[in-house]
Image (tube, rainbow, N blue to C red; front, side):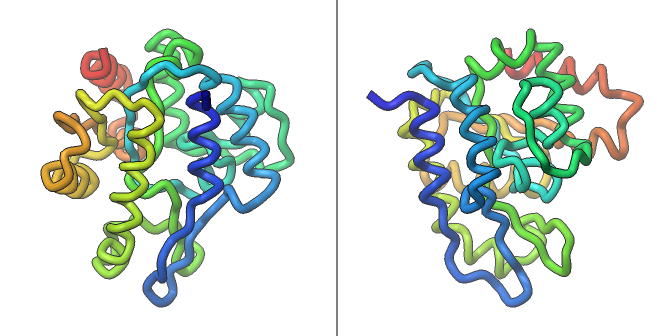
Length: 221
């Protein structure tokens, strides 16, 4: 029987995007041997079981977090310092990852948190244009082009053993609107619960981090 980790890793290794709009490139760390090896260490550390988990969905990976390490909202520095997963990647801190791990520590730590939750994104692969991060919804043609990929990816992840009573969406604006619309159409989850996006919190509401952490914990528990 495949473990949750086995399912995640098999899913990542098979990811491929359709044709993208001109000038848009996909980030697929799972095609890179180094990044895949790092993600494998992480997932086998926390997901080598068959427990059901609820899914938390961001927008799409960024260049300095999941787009580098293959682990959503986890930058190279956190992989090494927190989990002993050594790497030669540039140790640039990702703001969103800082908030996520502050929240995870408040929840009870990574072992407890990851035994109950699985983090990914509406698009499990990220995008860049002109050397900068791109959200899937920033370009209508991109959003339309990837929708079959997004729907297929969610269906495949549900088969891991995802608890379908609720999903959590990082982002209360466009990401939530899109995911909620897809959910109403396809019936993935009984409900989608929005959470403030970590980057928004870290850029604009840093003084209120404790209040946002408390809101996360209230909704997750």
